[in-house]
Structures are given as C-alpha cells and as structure tokens.
Image (cartoon, rainbow, N blue to C red; front, side, top):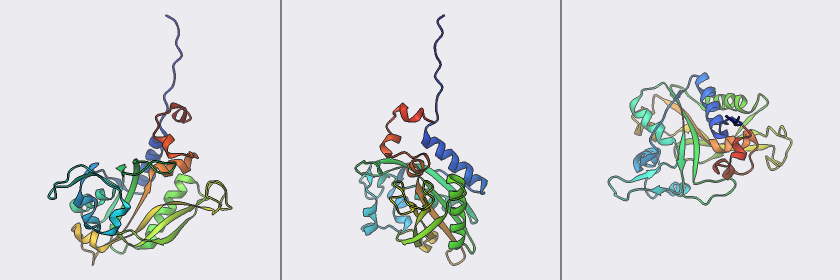
Length: 247
C-alpha cells in the first residue's frame, strides 16, 4: 500500500484560550458554570436591571426567537444570565466563571461578529469590594498575558453593576510605551466589570444588605486576538485552516 502523509490536527485558537481561562480560574478556586444559549427575556434583561424600554437595551442588538409577550425567547446577548440562574439555586459564598457563546444582530467587521464567545465571572460573599475585583483581574491577566501585565479601571456604566468600570491592561507588545496594537496609548481595552448591583442580588434571592459581590465580562474572541496577535476577528470564525494550522 502506498504511504500517505498524515497531517496532524490543530487546536483552534479559541479553544486554546477557553482552556487557558478555565485552567486559570479553577486554579483560583472558581467553579465553571453553564447556561442555555436560548434564553428568556427575564434572565437576559429584566433580572439584570434592564427592564423593558430601558435605554441600556439599545446596547444589545437582540436576535428574538418568539414574540409571545408572556414567553419571549431570544439568543442570549451575553453570558450574564448564567449568573442569575446560578444565584437562584445556590447560596453564598459563590465563585463562578461562565464561558459560552453569545449572539448579537450586528454588522461584522474586524472587531465585531454576530456570534462570539464571552466569559463572565461572579463572586458573592460578605464584605466583597473593588479591591477583591482588582486583585482577581490582575492575577488573571498576569497568568494569561505575562507577569509584566498591569491593570487599570476607568469609570463606566453597566446596568447590572454599581459602580462600573471599563478594564484595560498594559500593552504586552510595547510594555506600555505605545504601538500599533494599543493605538499608541500603552493600554488595551478588555471589557466591563464592577460591583454587582443590589437589585440583581435581591432579584436572585440574595440579601443585598448582607452580601456584596463583583462581576466582570470579557470577549474571548478579543482575548484570543490580543494573545495571538490576530488582526481581524472574522479570521477566527472563517474556518480557514491556514489560521488553525499555526497553532
């Protein structure tokens, strides 16, 4: 029989990043939680302090599946519903991370896709504050991007946290000096974070007068682009083996 070259398979860079995230957080004592990709309006919006007609809903261009006002279904726009579902079934202390696929009705470009992966984390206990949030994020980013990585917060608004922050990391390409990757700012924007809004805690059956918590959410596609220097998000989802074969 004629010998045939055997080509070795490669792990997709998204899968590599998801595995890295899972390993980092489980080493830090987090449990990995999952939830449905087809969600209800309640879990995707209402329970997260985003009621009907709230202007924040404009931030999420939603794929609606059903229009029945009593049972409106949609493709989840973020993995935050996993947090609410988990809080309903578990008592504090809570320490979870939830990676998964999300969907938004958006035009695709180099930085946006209609289908993408997101990871969110939630910690609930007595006395949780911003210092705990920053400590966890600093540890996470150092393990993912290198020990030289530093983290900063910028005030921002997200309806399910108060206060809310945009989270940036120092550019690992130029060590904060300024380059094309960080648009000469020295910083790379990663995503949102903050202390869990008391409404979200109370709505999930957790006493906000006793417990507090923090949460953050980052796009795994963006983390992958930054980590592996991929210039266009569409390449990640193209199925082009020339990308995958590099890993």
